[in-house]
Image 1 (tube, one colour):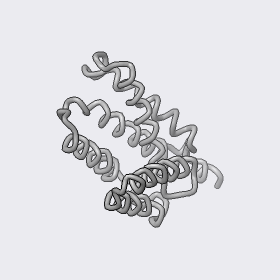
Image 2 (cartoon, one colour; image 1 turned 90 degrees about the vertical axis):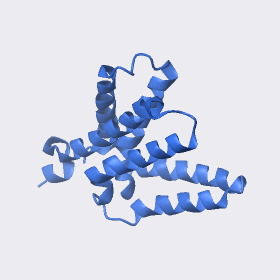
Image 3 (cartoon, one colour; image 1 turned 90 degrees about the horizontal axis):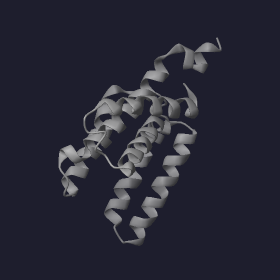
Length: 155
C-alpha cells in the first residue's frame, strides 16, 4: 500500500498521460483542473474500505452531499447515497474496491449517469471519465509494486 501521498503522486503522474490525448489542449483551464482533481479522488477511492485519509475525505463529502439532499427533501437520492457509502465500509480491505472490474464499473457508471442526466454528449465528458480511470488505475498499479507495498516490505 503506497499511502495517500503516494497515491496522490501516482494520480498526478497518470493524469499527465491525458496530455497526449487530442481533447486535452482544447479543454479550458477549469476543465484541466477538474481532471486532475478527479484523478486524485479516484486514486484515493479504493482505500475507502479501510480507515485512511481517503475514507475520511469521502465520508465527509458524502455527509455534506447527503445533508444537502435531505435539506432539499430529496430523500430517495439521500437514501441511495447513504447505501452506497456503506458498501465499501462493510467489505474487506482490498476486496471489490481493489479490482479491475470496479476500476471500469465505478467511473463508467458515473460517466453514463452524467451523460443521461445532463445535456452534454459522451465526447464532452470523456476527459473526465479517463481522468477517473487513470486515477483508479494508478492506485491499483502502485498497490501491486512491491517497492510501494509497505506491509510486504516489513517481513
